Amino acid sequence: MPADVQTAVKTIEAAYKTLLEKEKGNYIEFMGSLISNSDDYYGLTSKYEMIAELANPNFRKILNKHNLLDGLISNIKDLIFKLFDKFGISHNSTLEDSLIASLNTLVDNFDSTVYNNWNKTRTAQRWFRDNIQRVSLNEFIGNKVMDQVNK
Image (cartoon, rainbow, N blue to C red; front, top):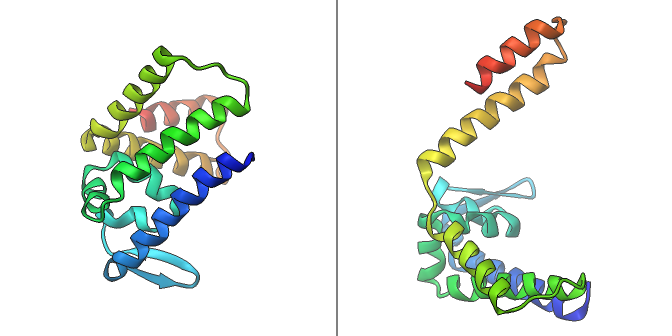
């Protein structure tokens, strides 16, 4: 990665370390992994989950409480534009405005009902995928079961 991309990544990692320091009472360390005390604090489990949890309004409140939210979002936007430069993707004000608007829409319009429905389907599909290999079913029956899982 170019130095400016590495700098953006390091800034995001620093925000994660700051968050861990300030929220020590909301997670435990167990066998090298961090386990959050509640779903609201799931973003503490890793720097990747911290970014993913930007879509969770409750987690954003936690970030905001420590004055980390705006800086984190700004660094992610900067990182995206630096990656544009690295891969020779031209960007103009229209593209940048659209990208920022899309990012803000994703972050600001989290719908827990939609997420929970999607997550239930994903969990069922993973179970089916992982377990179907253990059972000898013909393809027709397997497809019927998968249709039911998806419904």
